[in-house]
Amino acid sequence: MANNGTTVGILHDEEKGLHRTDTTVTMPPELFEKLYLTPKVPHKGDYNSRFANPTPLGFVGFVIATFTFAMVLMGWGGVKGATPVAGIFFFVGPVLLLFAMVFEWIMGNFFPMMAMGLYAVFWLSFGLLQLPTLQLGLPYATDADPTGTMSPEFNNTIGLYLIVWGFMLFTFFIFTLKINTVFALIFGLVTTAAFILSDVYFKLAQGEVERAGREQKAAGALLFVVSALGWYMCFIQMAGEMRITLRLPLGDLSRFWPNTDVDLAEVAQRDHHD
Image (cartoon, rainbow, N blue to C red; front, top):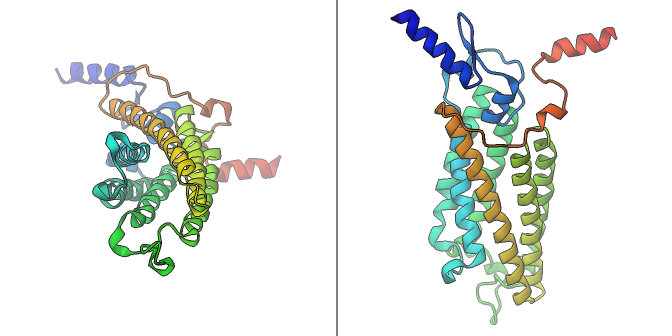
């Protein structure tokens, strides 16, 4: 009975793209990149076997926060401002992203660790703008604008901050081109949304409120698409971890790049001999 169960387990693993040896279960680089969103590289230790995959957890926080923020930006249901859902900026998004980031670091998954940390600090920093009790615009307050949040100085500062974020997100986008199309689209669209949001604040600084409102809705629409793509990727990863066979495409881009499942020291030694 035990041998029969083992045989069934082996066949089951092979159907999922896993390959069993006498001592462990391994996965091909394509499946590894699909589940962990990072190229498969040699690591010391067996952390991928000992710990659960943290990447979907980070995506859950990212998707919930981004979906909510996108709908607020688009003004669905007549909403104005994200103050009632400020929790997405401090708890839902950052908490799950930070947990995922720490375990990505433990498991040696470099790029997901960087991405989780990037989005976590973005939500935390941008969330401060949604708390009127902090009175961040007070230094720019006037009689006509007692809160100071409509002043050119206040809005230009935020616009410049978002430009910096746009360039950083674009840097990450370049490296997603080594993983898959869906992940690259997420970063590409988020980059575009960041630049549009920066212009929203520049338009507010110039007093062009109506145009700023239109651009805000455009940025919200882009982030809504980003959220849908994030949910799609999260669903595929959770299905893979639950051993549910799905043939949903992600647009693998790793096949266009050299194999990364090699030791850097060996590569350096080989290049030195050449």
